[in-house]
Image (cartoon, rainbow, N blue to C red; front, top):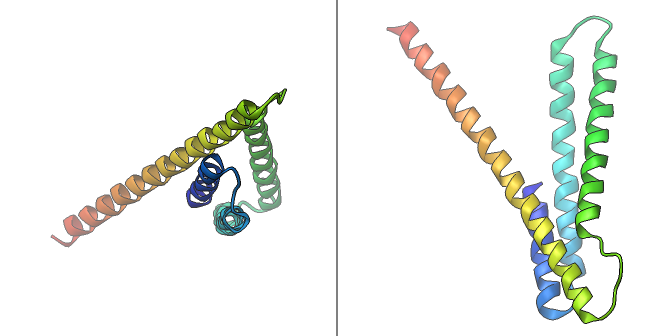
Amino acid sequence: MSAGFCILTLSARWSAAYGHSSMPLMVLGLAVMGFAELFIDPVAMSQITRIDIPGVTGVLTGIYMLLSGAIANYLAGVIADQTSQSAFDASGAVNYAINAYVDVFEQITWGALACVGVVLLIWLYQSFKFKSRALAVES
């Protein structure tokens, strides 16, 4: 997801510098985000079914879909508010709008990279903890 927003940030910066944006770059950014989405839901669904409480798996799946959709729609509204402009007067307004897109996409990129970093740190901590336990058991 972070790579997709990074590509959209580059596209917005390109637009600010040259007055237009590259359509393949925008499509690539959205395609990368769509491709990342294909990896998120199956992992979440497998974790939900791993809980394996009889008769509740469907309800848990529905709750996950409801909550993830609600959070995604809320965040989409926040992003729309941050990038919208009520009145266009001259080229200054266009530059303001472009800079708003650059700022918002850049914030999302850094936030997503921070999430990746946190997940990697948790994974490294867990793998180190299990490895040290295995060495203690062998001794």
